[in-house]
Length: 220
Image (cartoon, rainbow, N blue to C red):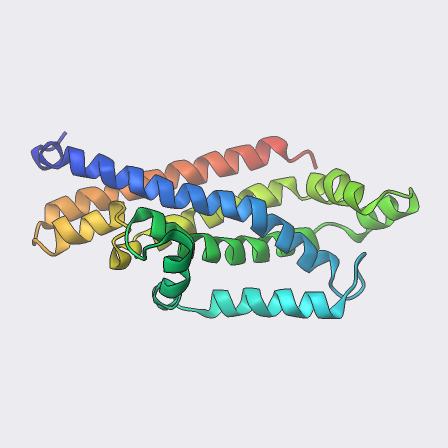
C-alpha cells in the first residue's frame, strides 16, 4: 500500500463509511418509495390497469421537476426542509435527505421504463385469469421485469455514488469530499488519483455484481 494511503488510512475509512451511509439510505429510499412510485406511474398511464390521468400527471410532474434540478442546486434548495426533518443542515445524516429525494425520483423513472418493456401479453394474461392488482404487480410485472429492475438499481447505485461526492458542500463528507479536501485543495495530486482509483474499483464491483445477478435471475 502506498505510504500516502497509510498516512491517511483512518480518514479514508471514515470517508468510505460516510459514503456507504449516504448511498445505503439512497438505495433504501429507492426500493421503499421509488419502486412503488414508478409502479404507479406505469399503472396509471393511459391504457394501463389503473389509468388515472390526474395521478399520473401529478407523479410525472414531481419526478420530472426533481430530476431536472442540478443536484447541487437541489441540495441547497432542500436545506430548510433538511433542517426541519433532521434538525440540522450539516453532516452525513443531513446529507441523506437530498440523497434520498433524488434517489426516489431517479429510480422511479427507471422502474417505469422497465415495466413498460414488459410484453402487453403478460398483463392481458393476468387480467384474463382474474388476478388482483396486487397479484398482477408482484406475480407478473415484477417477475417479468426482475432482471431490468436489478440493472436499473445497479445504474441508480452508481449514480448515487456520484451524487455523494457533492455532499461536501453541506458537510456530508464521503470519499469524494475527502479527495477534494485532502487531495485537490492541498495539491496532493497523487492522493486524489489514488482515491479516484478506489472509487473506480467500487463502481466496477457494483456494476459486475449487478450484471451477474441480473443474468442469473433472467429466465427468458
